[in-house]
Image (cartoon, rainbow, N blue to C red; front, side, top):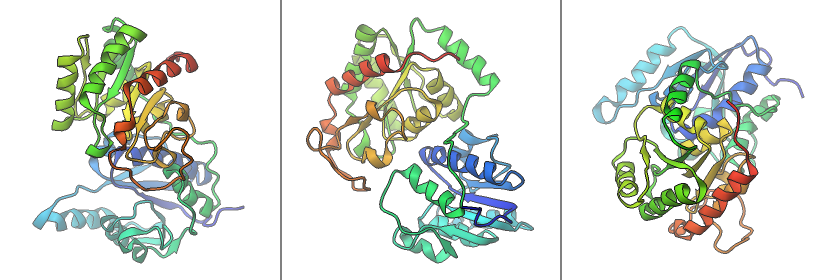
Length: 351
């Protein structure tokens, strides 16, 4: 199948927020770059995920949406209108479906605004697009984005993220790792949804076992939120081993920490998908969200601790349905089993 819009020379991608979603955009951007080598590709994005993907080789330009709230909200959209002045996109991929994203799609001067089918376009988002991908059963988020490529006649393979530390970041990474007495195990201790989080005391016991049973140095990674800080403090106080506290708001440091770790343990949140893109073995802790939809894409699925299943081996469908309280089914023994499996199934990588 040939390209549906072979004349596209100015292409925009609309995906504003969430680091995990930004990671899922990268294989789409790389496939578009292969299919449209002469096109100019612009990504409309918010500042935090922008810090993760800035300088990516598939993207020619980033347009930042600096979201404001309350009476100043109009300024955010006014700034976008100014950024779009004199531009004309041949094709815009509206990968996000809530109302704010719809307003931005409407503001973007695009001939074709390609969005989700009406059934999946929440918040009346379908009103802001003029071409839509066909309806499709619920699938993995990554495959859902690939539906846009398939609609355009673009082959998503090979699936590439091309997300890696810069040479300068490699030097910082080498210095950090060189000061550790053993390989790092990165612990992602918090998410933006409390229902996805694991108990702090479990993290503390895991940290102790990583040192005593597996010869790893626990490194706490993640953002600067109060919730993450609280969990980190419990780990530092109760684990009884040396734990490196690397929480902070430097997204690129997070990337090179994940890249340099022997393995990562994480609930369903952005760093899990960053680790997957970096090919770092990641033990995923799932209960509230469905790992068939939100799990690591096509690799490390064998390392998922599946608390979403109500009983071992439950053949549940891929869905967006949440299961409140299901993180309680994720036990320490289950996680330790997957840590051991990660170390035996995935040998250390050369850098």
